[in-house]
Amino acid sequence: MSGASASSASRLGGRLRAVLPERTTWATMRRSPRKDLLAGVTVAIVALPLALGFGVASGAGAASGLATAVVAGALAALFGGSNLQVSGPTGAMTVVLVPIVHRFGTDGVLTVGLLAGVLLVATAIGGAGRLMAFVPAPVVEGFTLGIAAVIGLQQVPAALGVKPSGAENVAVTAWDALADFVSDPQLAPLALAGGVAAVMLLGARLRPGVPFSLLAVVAATLLASGAGLDVATIGHLPSGLPAPSLGFFHLADVPRLATAAVAVAALAALESLMSATAADAMSVSQRHDSDRELFGQGLANLAAPLFGGVAATGAIARTAVNVRSGAVSRLAALVHAAVLAAVVFAAAPLVEGIPLAALAGVLIATAVRMVEVASLRALARAGRGEAAILALTAAATLAFDLVTAVIVGLLVAGALALRQVARSAALTRVPLHDGLPPADHHAEEQALLAEHIVAYRIDGPLFFAAAHRFLLELAETGDVKAVVLRLSRITAIDATGALVLGDAVDKLERRGILVLVSGVREDHRRTLDALGVLDRLHAEHRVFAATPDAIAYARTHLPGVLADAAGGGHR
Image (cartoon, rainbow, N blue to C red):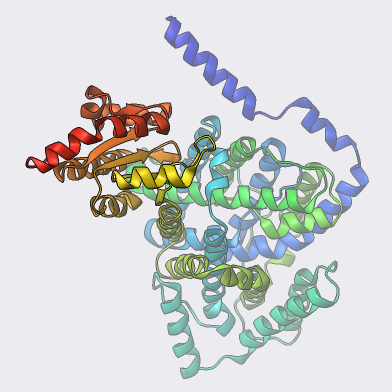
């Protein structure tokens, strides 16, 4: 093996060791097993109707949702980067999966999940977890609001007891369902969905620790069966997980599914890291490892499709329940997966009779609870820019998809940030004695002004968003014979800013003005030298380390400038 290959293999091995859990991480599961056991059972009770509902909503079926919660939940708990994270099918992922199921079928959505797992493992090994810190809060809140709206609209057909029209846009599907309901009203599904949602929302306000979602679903199921209501139910569920299989995977399908896989992987990374961050905030001493979390989610998404499961992410709502129930380690998430596995193997016949309208009510209530009104108000009050980012991201989520929405939000946020940075930059005419040793500044300045010498200081970044404004201000400098440009306070400079600065110097010199530069920082000199912006000034020794030297040069050479100007101008 060559030296370069050995070095690459060593770096790869180092990155793999960095994302694999340490023994001490798993050892924490022995700290408080009773607390973790209780928390795990509590989370499983909350997760059961959600796993069923998100499986049905995604189009892959209730069994697929349960398989995802069991397999992905266990692997992400073992290999993830958070001790308190609970993973499984989520509403945000459902929003992305629905159009994939419509276009490519169940085999396609399983393949997408597998490919997303590969991408997540690769991003974890590449150390991309830290990039989450660069997603602005208005973007996160905007796509959360958009997700909530999409989840709610997705449930309208089931809540009204009509078949979905199959339109790709959820708003259109909801409108079609409403039209069908008006032409042939079915009150039983609407009553079940509304009742479950109301019980969950009111119960959460009165007794937050009680699993009202499960209680409401059980009550709705008993009512529907006891009263003989004509409502659609989940239907047949297999008694156990299917044997692992790659029969759904076809290599020829990979190119046409690649874009969808990137979207799923991006959403899984974003939502999982958001959820892990929320878990850190709710706990006292827990801190997650972003790259390990992506690695664990990658393994979870690699394995879940083998058992018929869809793509999974860290689940914010279930993670919050886990933390608030007293979880101490990842044992709680493992218990949650084990309890759901027991349901799959032992209670499938009981689950089969759950009305789809009841699950729709669960997801509608979940969507309502996803919207943090206080956070939205705070961001709206923070400024028009933040409100615009939030609104555009939410609208793009409804109109297009989540990945497009995040991209739109990031672009708008980036543009507004650039505008703010550009506004922070300033070109200021400063007294010539500014920063110089104490002296008779008034007399000194008056003498220099009489000789037509002025100084300008550039503060902040000089880049494409602000440079042209500087050019106009500099080029319109009044009746002077010498200009000192003080560059020591430029914080950053790009190629555009450097070229515009050069243009300003050229325009000033064409008007017969002597241009002197002082305080060029070493980290900016490379850009200026590469573009030759100050080459002529360097050649004529008009670039100085300090402003006093530039002023002294101007006073020495100004009589010659005046003579040249009187004789017909100066280049």
